[in-house]
Image 1 (cartoon, rainbow, N blue to C red):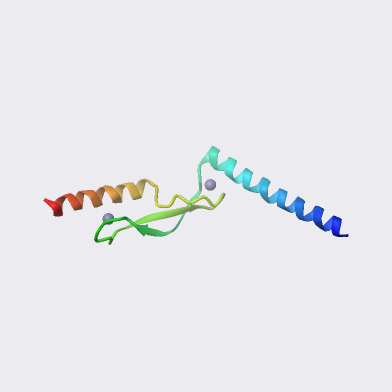
Image 2 (tube, rainbow, N blue to C red):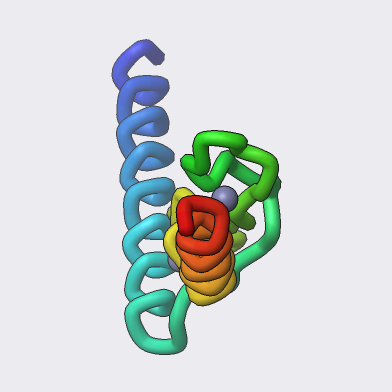
Length: 86
Ligand SMILES: [Zn+2]
Ligand SMILES: [Zn+2]
């Protein structure tokens, strides 16, 4: 019986692995399905702006705030900083 249980565990682990590979492969083809999961600090000294962070609903990958909207926010931060320094 233990043998069968072990075989089942191994088979299930393999299925999980294949499912993750399929999710990753479909992301490579059609792109990640990003979902907004929160925000992170932009890194400003005054630190009041937040960058959106997304997680892929298919493969669970996270962009850690590396996206177009975050880039725009960081550019605005830099601009604001330039103004206050001047
Ligand atoms: Zn993905
Ligand atoms: Zn900022």
